[in-house]
Amino acid sequence: MTRPFAVKAGKKRKKREENYDKEEVELVKEETPAATADTIAEDEKIVEDLVQDMPGIPITVSNSTIRSRAIFILEKASLEVAKVGKSYQILNSEDHANFLRKHNKNPSDYRPDIVHQALLMILDSPLNKAGKIQAVYVKTEKGVLFEVKPHVRIPRTYKRFAGIMLQLLQKLSISAAGKRDKLFRVIKNPVTQYLPVDSRKIGFSYSSEKLVDIQKYVTAVKDDVNFVFVVGAMAHGKVDDEYVEDYISISGYPMSAAWCIARICEGLQQKWSVL
Image (cartoon, rainbow, N blue to C red; front, side, top):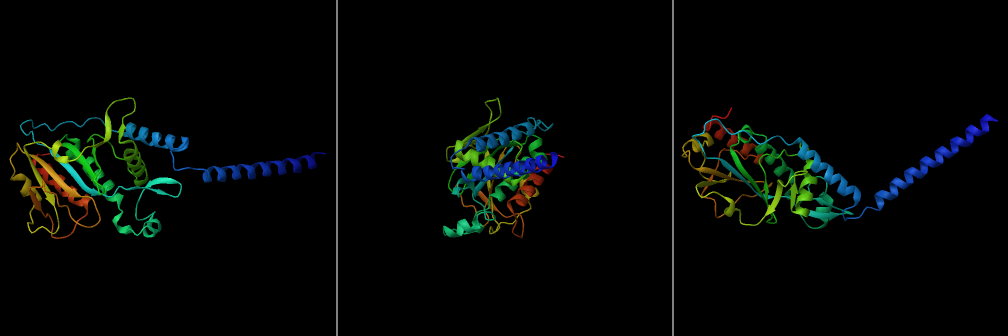
């Protein structure tokens, strides 16, 4: 009596598992490019985690006689949103190579990981934690300009970062949970309207004939002058903005944006005695 019952129950259990798997597949197929409940929940969870991980406002450097600070502008960042399959994504050369070739675009030009690495280098630096970075601006290849607050903690992984950037470009701002403080916000061009009057605008290019030691270069600038550093966040090409006053090269070798920023921060940390 018990054996037939056990066999029968086993068949039901197997059938129930098959139905469950089938339902999962159907749910994946029914996803739409519009913001579904799951997508919204996931985006909100990413932002919530980002806010919770965010450290406090940086403490200013003890030397109160030095009032100048630094501003970073990341130009030509590859942050392009496109509908891939049934969802909207930030295009990148690794995941969307076939999609980009199909649309006659060069995959090597789509490197959003460059701006991710650059932002990590800026915001994780002792210079920022000492309160010496006034603002960070990012301008995309398509001309969209947005501000990143210096006290934001950027997601460590690219996937989480891409989710934040996608939400920013769709909603135009991301605020801290339960607060009015906007961690990221799209702003109007040009970026020059947000720069201090007493600032020195410096661009970086390997092709520049002016090769300098960055530490000596920043040390020679007066303490009452703010620095505006314009760094390219693209895989190829160079920054060519009219508002830049001086184009310099800080190495005899081509460098990534992140490594260029690391050298800039190190030079300023020496100048302002930030350990």
